[in-house]
Image (cartoon, rainbow, N blue to C red; front, side):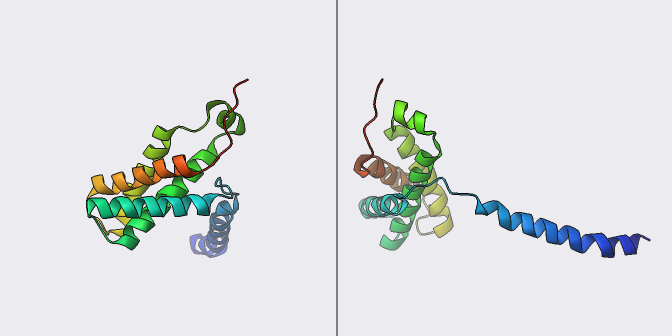
Length: 141
């Protein structure tokens, strides 16, 4: 009897779990229409910082910075509209998000084996995105 139940329910259970896994990422992303712009800003800033620190290749540093710029964009996109309007953006938060993304992206790409330098490249990318991304000024009411 157990073998019959396994043959009947197991394929259906596996099909349902695979379907639910594929449908979860179909939710809308938090990043906005400036994600490519922010990724390009982060790539340039991190490539420059990587050249100054002498860690990794140009392309590896650019990839790390692009990931950090996209992460900063996503972190600002996760906030509510009223929070963005009242509190504006914070350079410390953007640099922190960039540093975290830089460490993770540096570990994945493996070009620079120094975690501190990967974090520095990501923080520079996050700060550059904060400075160069033109968002509307916050309004105090």
